Image (cartoon, rainbow, N blue to C red):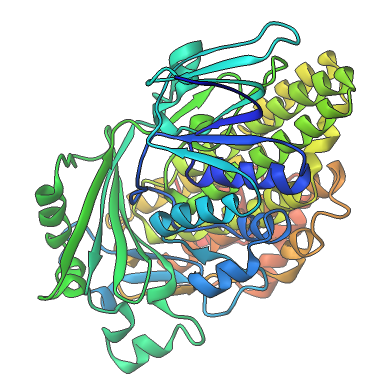
Length: 548
């Protein structure tokens, strides 16, 4: 047994913890940082598909741009496949949604076991101590200026000024503070495995199918196979290995997978699964998580303890939000610690309170997007996914890279309480929430057609976001203010209602003219359109359509 005094103890040494340790050391070189990791060897876990904001973080804050380019695949976007309920459609006949162009802002597919192992070595080179095979038995929070105590299972004691929980869903702080809420509104579980020697997705289909994605590559995308109540991911890790797994909603599907054999059989029950697994596949390992969705009540504390990554909250692997979540949390934690070192305790308190409000808004915003996407419907996804991309690239990402969250440190407690109310209302009304409302109205229309999944076969949608909606991200959040956010939210609403109107027209074997679209835009701006039925009437499609 021993006792050490350090500046920062980070409990958990996988991606969130190791990145935070590196972030802090590069930002404040004098800090003495110890990372305590319970695993002797890192394994394969959820979180291989990175979002663009993580590349910005890894490149600018962590000095890892060359490392990423040298070791991991460039991600060719998110790609979605749809079919009907029979699960008997060849992949080349499934409806597909994905981009045909390279993105201006990079992102990568990460082999997590490799990344986590490499980060330990890279961090050691700059003076960060990572202790492997060390479990934390309990923590004591220091009162006032007293140091915290972190006690390991073998009796070693670490005393520190700042303490961070990056230990994942098994969260050490959750056991201490009992303040983690499981999200009953989104009851999901997941099972996954790594598989070698699967067939290459781009080798299937005929030449026209292979060529329609132009300069992109399906096998380098984060692929999603979407169904009612569940979805399957497939992510490339290296030239021979893919990560493949399923996430299921307990109330919307009958899926329940307990072991590797059940997962293998489930995937092979789909025609595309038989095609991609082929005859030479080799399963490397298996993992699973039950009831994943949860969030911590407190993420940043004035008592100098913080949470990051899955220890702070987790929703669902859908849309790969985990890397963006840890990016913003780590940047905010680093900023709070820097302010604490500078001795401005009043500003530390403001940042803790403000950043906590921002973090919970961020989490609830993504939660809202994800919970509405277990419909397995190609037409509905066209409407929702565009809204998600506009929200992410127009608001969430530029707010992160532009450090919009720093504005929250200037607000007093009364203003923050008002902001919470505004956020609560906004998440349930305008912007992306409006897109979900339109999606629900479109779903009602499609149900009346008698075959709501008719377009799940044989269609292709090129996901393209006009430059005007990318400008906030391309400008790294410069100029992002309340007005810019309101403008983007309005654009999300208008684009969603136009996209849904186009779907209605397609199902009635007609097409919106440019004039129809202009009329919908004008009437929406004037407040004369409040729902999808109003838009259909504005375009005079109601002459042919019995809507509701």
